[in-house]
Image (cartoon, rainbow, N blue to C red; front, side, top):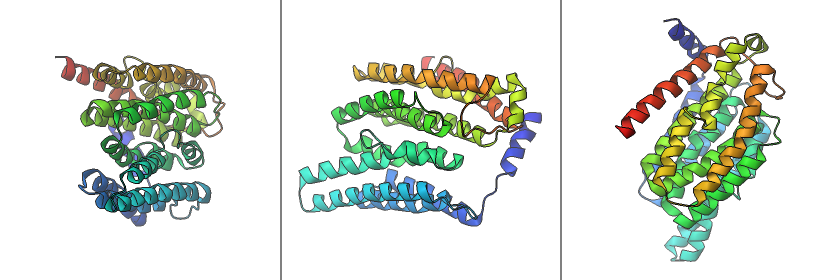
Length: 328
């Protein structure tokens, strides 16, 4: 009962304007149109609706965030233009032209290597909510389109690059947002490998990653320095971080095991290597939360204990449920 009251307190204190709510609906609707559309025109239109809604969310009322908004808009517009050109090229029966532009456009929009250069910069200069949305919901539609259009060799090559760049790139980061951006590159490599097996496996991995990543961003946005006075609270608050890291027995480990068992490719060992390297900055961040934070963009909040408790509950219960579901 006490947990429920604290969770309701957090939700009721979220400030949502009518324009923000409308933009959020447009963003979700655009992604769903892209995923379920049966034509390239519908897919492109859904991506544009999603972009327009998300751009408004990046600039809430009374707040002007120019740099990340412009960067994101330019990159996404360029990617959408490439997708549109590929559609027009298809109408003219220029298959090679179509394939090149379609792959480049989708790689740019989804932040796949080697066209991932914009992702850490935009996430690092955005708000916690916007950064969390870029790394979770905004990946859904482009990744589904990537799975439909990319060949197996292209998926594997991009996954290998993402695992290496994400693992090494996060080692020297001193910002939580940048660290999470490079972490998402490693997780994106696993999502691409999951697409090789089935869409359902990709969707399961994406859902679990999205929940843990958004809890992480949400927790960081509600922290304040009084939180550090309780080491146990700091420890529990790190549960969402451990869920992201993929350490057993957390949910992130379970999804990686499912991908490993479902996909027969040597590239999976590169993904494992990237995940092992990324553990270094996960563990550094973990000890920073427990013993004092050197990260420049972390603020602690007195009720974040309950966000951490939610993460712990999801990890333990979710892991047990998924194990019973898949192995019984």
